[in-house]
Image 1: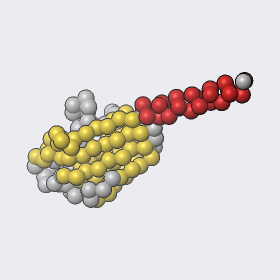
Image 2: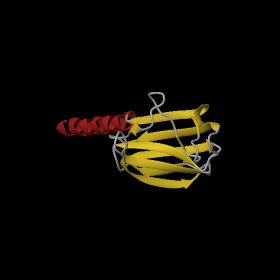
Image 3: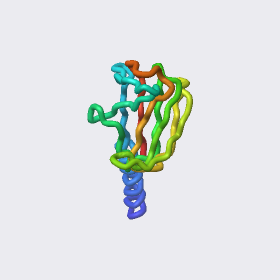
Image 4: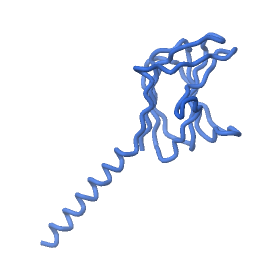
Amino acid sequence: MRTAVTVGALILASAAAVDAELATTKLYDFVNTPASVIYGPTGDTPIPFDPPGGLYIDVSGYRKVSFQISEAKATHFSLNMGIIAQTTVSQAFTGVIDNKIHTYSVVGPQMSLHLTGGPGNAHDKVQVWVFLTS
C-alpha cells in the first residue's frame, strides 16, 4: 500500500513540473496588429515591446527566445542579449529576414530585436512575433 502512495506522489510531482514549465512562457504578438516603426537615417529601428515603446525585454527566467519576422521593409535583423538598459554590454546575433522561425538560447538578462537594412527615415508596419520559453 505504501508503494502505491509513493508512486502516486511522484506522478503528481511530475505533473506539477510540467505545469510550471508551461506557465513560464510569454508571447509578444505583432501579427494581426503590426508594430509601427520608423527607420532611422541609416535604415535601422528597434521593435517596440511593452510597455508600449519599450526597447528591450527582461528574459531572465527564460531559456529560449524564438521569433519570426514575416513583413518588413528591412532586409536583416539583429537580436541582442545581455545588459541593454542604460549602459549596453550585449552580444548581437544577426541574420536575414527570411520568414523563418529563428530560435536562440538566452545568454543574458535582457534582449532587444532590431531591424536593419530598411529605407532611411521611412515608416513601416512590421509583422513579427517573439516567444519566450523556459
